[in-house]
Image (cartoon, rainbow, N blue to C red; front, side, top):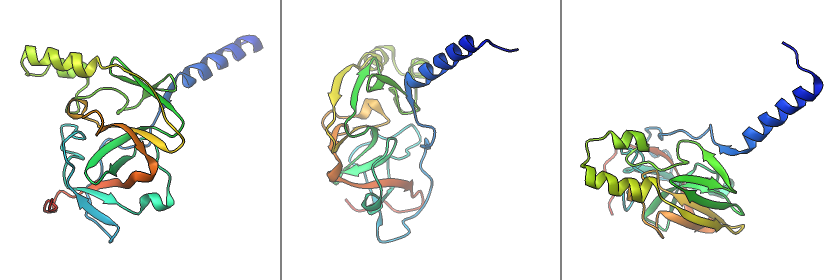
Length: 202
């Protein structure tokens, strides 16, 4: 099948427009690998809460943090970061971007964040799966309304801020695990989970 030049240009325009309508991340893995600290810069931490638990406890406990990673690397979208000495959350928006939430969907600069961490999850479940769970109807309705229908007005980030959201939206705490974070206060990047390690002392 062949197309005329005007039609080909129009189809190309549609393709580019569709691609520009969302922001994707195909390189960030859903789960962190199982590994032990390998150097003095890599240490175990025990997060204050389970806002990163996707139903597999990953990464919710015995998380390996590389405290030297950001000495040579920029913070990237999808990174799970350690900050304030006790919190673990995922970077969803980068410096100088605008981020908002509409009915549980993250928008960055007005575009849909189309990736596994771009919309509301509870224990790793999207809304349809959550509605089929065996949680009581009354509690389920409350969670659907508060989590999967969550709205947040657009937040503008400065050139030294990122925005973080924990993967388990039901366990997020506004001002702690869903918030703006100064880049200079990011202490390290989560690089793995040590399943065989004893929990670090708190």
